[in-house]
Image 1: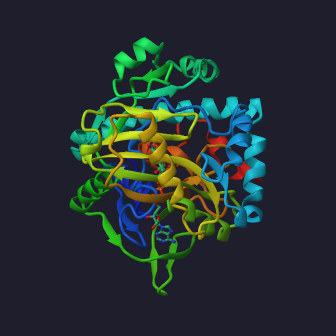
Image 2 (image 1 turned 90 degrees about the vertical axis):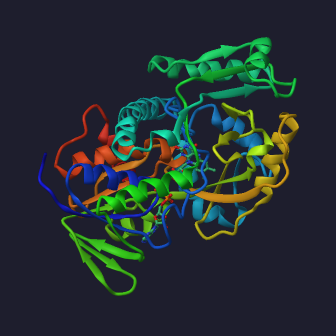
Length: 413
Ligand SMILES: Cc1cc2nc3c(=O)[nH]c(=O)nc-3n(C[C@H](O)[C@H](O)[C@H](O)COP(=O)(O)OP(=O)(O)OC[C@H]3O[C@@H](n4cnc5c(N)ncnc54)[C@H](O)[C@@H]3O)c2cc1C
């Protein structure tokens, strides 16, 4: 075991939680600082997927064609809030640049290595915390309404195969046998068996936090104003001194990094959902992915969640719950077995970077300040990998088999 440090972790989302968990396993003393409460951000209501097979970046050559079509639809899967267009234009510009084939391939390789690390470290975290019963392997089934969209996606899945991730394709007959309750308009499917789900993302975060509390992790419910080498400054005027500081504050990490001289194009990419009671479709086992419509349906332990979409907006823009409604109506149309009554709507902000990769590494101001944010659509899945990499960085080591340059804050300079 290496040297033991006093570490402050900023942010009580899934990244802060699984980072803290990994650090106490190393013997460090951890204090978490969270301004609202555990799982106050996207970690509360995401789609619950441990999406290890999801290595294809959103910024892809094929997304441009789809995005232009979606863009024209005010509640479509990908849109920009008009009043925020100037604020988010630099992010959009970098996103477009990231759709180049060369960047797309780099992002796939880096995502694959992160997912490999995540799949390796998740079971270890579950063993240490005893939370195995909150995770199940239920697989994810992608659904297609036309041969053309299926064939286009099969091309993308070839990259997935190159990284040794198993999947199966279904023709119409096999699809409807495998998953009853689908509209007849679905003509093909792709099933990724290694996809897992947590029982409920908010409950999962709280269960990790309970474990951390038992292990002596201190929680300070305050807001961080800024950090400097070894000092965390809180908005109430108090300070916390630490050997190491981890910034895991989701999309709000941007302000803290800006103050340290690292201008990172991080936004809160908004997603929406509706959570129905479990009785909405009690037999649903697999997660269902509607790629052409940008949403998915996930069976939770205590409900059925329908959501997704990507809305580019500033952090303080008001939510537009018509999106939740729109996805629910679409799902009801395509899933005759689903009862759409009695749902609760939610909006969350994914911490997203234009190249679909997170930021993990030292700040330019100090090696005692470590960034761990920006996992976009995949933060729940990659949280144990982020914790593992932070653990290595704190010990002054470089995580093995990961292209850390592609994940550094400096890549946007
Ligand atoms: C609709 C939707 C579906 C998704 N589905 C999936 C999925 O199936 N699988 C998956 O892997 N990922 C999914 N995600 C993405 C995932 O939810 C996020 O990547 C992840 O939750 C980000 O975690 P985080 O800890 O980085 O940020 P957050 O959960 O946002 O946590 C950051 C925390 O920091 C706190 N904070 C911020 N600033 C300060 C400050 N100055 N001082 C103190 N505290 C501060 C906030 O209050 C917050 O609690 C989905 C996201 C959405 C929106």
